[in-house]
Length: 513
Image (cartoon, rainbow, N blue to C red; front, side, top):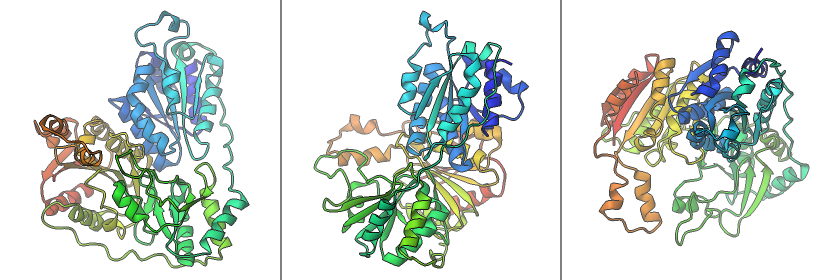
């Protein structure tokens, strides 16, 4: 058995059976091993940012890591932006990077790079397998490390000679590292604050605090104490829909965030961080939390957030309550494709147990309100602010949640970073509906010009215009093997969305806004 074969065996032994890949010469023995070791599903991405973004979406829905397979330092570098997003989402990923043979590295061949150094910025665990006999146990250790709460990227660098050398030994699965419980003091402090009651207390949820079960506890706490409940601005996964606690996220826009959290005297963090602004702006605050508010930590991200919320609800003697009624499903929107009309179409037509992969950026900031009464669904955000995560995330989510329709709400400028993922959707026949919000500009940056007090002229505005020439999204999708159509009305969007939901495989809707 060579090292590559022991690697595949070890991943499968540890429950990792899906690999997103863009291999090169250094990884050929891994690729060849896939024919000799059955059980690993390998999905090709035409760009490393697609590979890493898809691994992110997969793990968020599957609840376990995928492996990636990247080619040397530059291949890793191409995938770093979506590894950054995955790190911010606390997504478990076993990130395998091929490298030069151990004896070839000193020759400084063209692809030689500081692969470990580049990996450390996005990884919680980094190791280079230097001996064929250790590859198997190194792989098992990588899987174990990736699953340490709340989840992290574990990068295993594999020199090519450790792949092709004989003497590989499969590693057995290692036990999961226990997730620590919160201390009694953390719960007691939150109880003391919440017993004061009222909307001046905010319970801010993140991470595992946004699962369906965790939201049931949060709802009990809200009803018993009158506190307000918010989610972080961007989240790896939120359970939403009729009968689940509906909450607002902390807004992206500074002034809106300040208004939303006005009057807060106490903020209790459950798997969340204290909100800060995305950027620093001249003469604006850096946090939307009032200066005189006190911050209390019920549970850090690496602690058992669900158990902490359960203990908190019990300590408050918060009784079980009926599931919240989020109102009636909206009627589909009509007329011009405003954010409100499009959100109403989504809320009216979203299928049961849909997965929403959201990179709608400016256009989609109001979508939450009109989708709260839709059937049960999960909402995934691009968490790290690195654009180009949406289409790959939707691709991976469709593989991680088979049988569920994925709706990718996608800004056009961001889509161009990783449009190659459409090809993977077609190749794998994935049930993904991609909605391109086509305004032919970087709308978010037009807003940022005002926020930072810049005074743009023609040259500056040209840098934010992607309509010269216009991108033909229908033609682009067709070239990737994905059926597509274009519309510029809410009614047209509703018709195309319904059409996409009645057929298997991917479909793209270009919505001119």
